[in-house]
Length: 364
Image 1 (cartoon, rainbow, N blue to C red):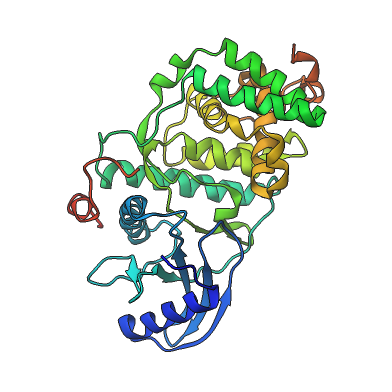
Image 2: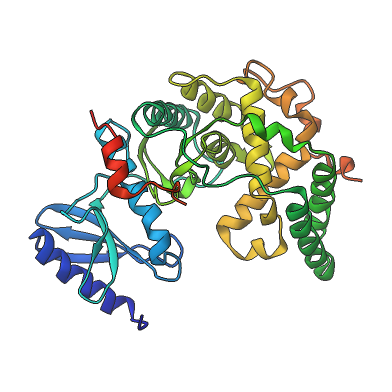
């Protein structure tokens, strides 16, 4: 594939949209968020739309097959009332191709504002929890089940190997922040019993409910974005990821926001204290490698690292923090001391094609 300038790619895609969808385009505005894939907001005779190009480096053809399935599931969720972009479809599906082979998807443009990590209000978190719970409820009933897992937790050996590399980097640059965090992380890795993840509940999950993929309007969630990673995995990722992303601020948990999210989720799905704690630890284990000095250079990874550091520092008292049937009604008595615990440190499911999945997904 010949490397092309963004302007050339945009021109190709817009011409294809005109031909394929019969839409006239007045203007196109680039959107900078995200990695590698190009994105635009376009003004058309059909209103404001969103275009996303799939970069070959990030999404080779084999990986794009899982995206095609994810888009089918997203479409089903949209039809069932989940706030997410509506997709425009052709006889070939949701992923379109230009004459030269550029791949893109076309959706409605969702209005709303992004909120910075840790600054999601209690009302916004409540509505987000309701939406995530409803999404899981629908996925468990209208998408195929009992599929091969897309991912399973790494072994201790793999995690320790990553830890060693990150430790050497932190020591070489003298980063006290990461040296301290990695000391805590090493103790957890040594002591954890990975059997705790054997009871994780399998199911379809968005798997990327970071704050950048959420839009809000006033005190409500207006859209869940970017379903490209959606897969059959552990739904518990969709509990801990938005909880940490929305409610960790300056190395402290914002209790009212955390409480609101969990209350909202429980309106549509059961959630025990055991499951919540397992969810947080699962995300910590999955993302442990982001506790890395190199993460400081990338905004999203730096935020992930800060969230993981908070979890590590509070690992032994997570149950105390979320001690009221998984709904923290008030801060524990030790709240003022619990957040500076530096002293404690010493693919797409196989065998399921896009067309095959469509036969299994019920849209009404």
